Length: 332
Ligand code: SF4
Image 1 (tube, rainbow, N blue to C red):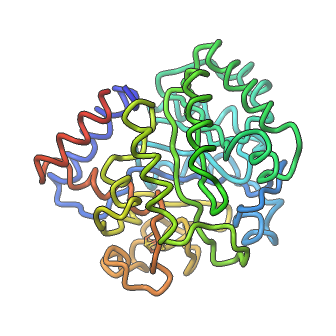
Image 2 (cartoon, rainbow, N blue to C red):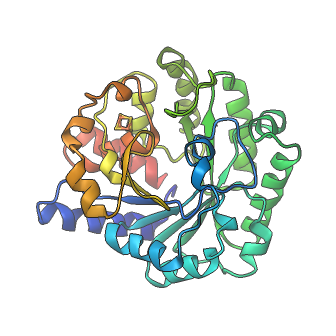
């Protein structure tokens, strides 16, 4: 199984409840960024540039918990910045687990050893370790030698101690298909529970040319799609077909909402029209249909995981072939 059974059933039940009540724009994942400070400065990170004026801000614990209640999404992805330097990360994680939220900690792994001494394994807890390639590539992307080796050591430590571990890999322009395959094989040998492989996305605030152009994506993601047949790649199979150019998808930005120290970021993880004080204000200020149908010029060529990955999940059951494909993929 590529996704924990409890998480799949909780999300399915939640979606059925929302659909029955006639709600159309509901979140599946809350990207909770309680801070933007980081102990690395990765070359593709838009956060440390966009939020440089508030880089020292940290959300009070009550505010973080309040945001979780406001969105009421079944999955809470705690990211940043580096979430393990957030001063309330332990009570935040423990409280969310107690409240039966599926917590995903998105981390560069540098501070994991200290954290796992304070938070035991749980069905509701997963780590999402950032690893963008083999040693030379990853250390170049994070701009520090030795980080790749730490990631490998931490993945082994987490697995030995019974934690669920998945990885998050961004494919850049100069990532070769051979290197993707080498990394996937390595992660399989480390017994990771799932691998997310996504295209690098171009933040409004960055001007470097490291991101895949849309015509470069199919070649790289055809290899990822092939690898997904035998390895625990957790990208939705329909989303993979979108990345290989075999089909088009509409966007679902409301399914993955972002809350950070400035407020609710809208309309999506990638582009910022504003930060809103409440979740309700985010919804009132955002024309979801406009973004769903990719009418904004900033949506041109966008294939962002957090925008598109949930679109097939929302359509689950509508098309028999796609539904079968998703079930086969996730239970294998
Ligand atoms: S297409 Fe991309 S940029 Fe546009 S709303 Fe969706 S995720 Fe955001």
